[in-house]
Image (cartoon, rainbow, N blue to C red):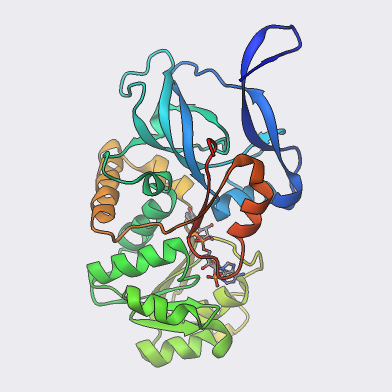
Length: 345
Ligand SMILES: NC(=O)c1ccc[n+]([C@@H]2O[C@H](COP(=O)([O-])OP(=O)(O)OC[C@H]3O[C@@H](n4cnc5c(N)ncnc54)[C@H](OP(=O)(O)O)[C@@H]3O)[C@@H](O)[C@H]2O)c1
């Protein structure tokens, strides 16, 4: 597609989703025609095949994603799968036409084309389907890093997690099963229970059916749980902290309610023991991995994907023009599968 710019030079344009101020995604996101970006030194231009609507994208649009500062008009979309289109000067490790997974640290994958540093690309074997490659890094890497590296949950221990029906939560259930870790899973709807048990959850509790800490202690024993991960915060996170063993560690890795955790609400949990509340953010951990650790993480994701342990269930697919519907669907209670934007649709 071609259009005239202000100096009447013919430039290629593409559709891209952008926002000019923070706010509700359905209100502030616009589909715009913008010039197709050119890759600079060490960069690659990709033709985006599919890009998920992740909770982090929506937090970013709302202005709550502290790790990345928006510069308006701001592009959106941190993850996706694309085809290498043009290599910038100095890029040697990729070839035009190659399919790759891309984590776009500054946002910009919700577009027909994106330019990113070559270091942000992950080559993925051909037999892994596009939908898995589109969600290859953010949830899979976080499930692995939180459980196996940051908490390093030992075999036989219990791991407590909230939002267990999320795509990431399901990965954790299947991976824990394979690692010999037992999971207690918190959901907000009873309908999720049977589904998660079928995936291998050892226990599933419903947050609205009684205090979480009491329900957890009935399952794991009165001393509480040593390992927990929570993206919900608010009342759920507050009650999960009370379910911790005196040596317990809880990683907070999201803010699905946007509400505070009240750690000191009950002084019994902060005046004895050494419970720890810790933040987990992939944007902190990924750049701290050595090249060898990063390669190993990629191999682990590929292996777990081949075994069906790390898997994203694909949900509805939308064109960029239907961005309003897509973001509404992504936050629908009880939504089935990950929502994808398909720029060529
Ligand atoms: N810190 C990091 O680096 C990092 C990396 C990856 C992911 N994350 C976080 O991981 C979480 C899951 O991501 P995902 O892509 O797997 O999400 P997802 O597939 O969109 O699932 C979201 C889940 O959260 C539940 N949920 C939504 N709002 C809730 C609320 N107010 N109270 C309780 N439960 C709620 C939903 O429950 P229903 O099924 O009942 O609708 C759903 O199961 C997100 O918070 C995301 O930001 C963080």
